[in-house]
Image (cartoon, rainbow, N blue to C red; front, top):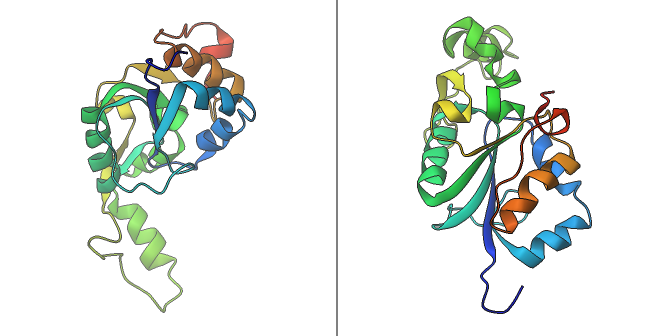
Length: 187
């Protein structure tokens, strides 16, 4: 890479999920040094303390489902400021485990069960702290039901080799080949 070539502006985002996909990203181990040669990580819960999602991001890996208003707001901002958006992991691709509450119809039964029925009796009330506790959406959604998605990287979590095979071409301006069991298997 010559001095004139700009690095890819790479971001990762964590919505409603367990952060397992980000842990797999860290499992890239030494290959992360190769990523650093071709990309600047401009936003990530594992690599920076930047609070606002930046403009002009080339590639963003979005982990997790859209479960609350904060997730929704962030995802809309990410899509408007990102050239290539990848659903990163089964929660982002299908809503997976976080969407299990969808079977109950709305968020209310989950909140009632957790905060009222199973309460310790001390704090027997529903969470209501605007600006601190984001309200749950009635349905948990996969990323593609909210914004357009350019790349799907399934897996729970995707393995480090799958992540590398998906993002390495992007670092060089190419489209990854997402076919075959090793690249598209769920779970």
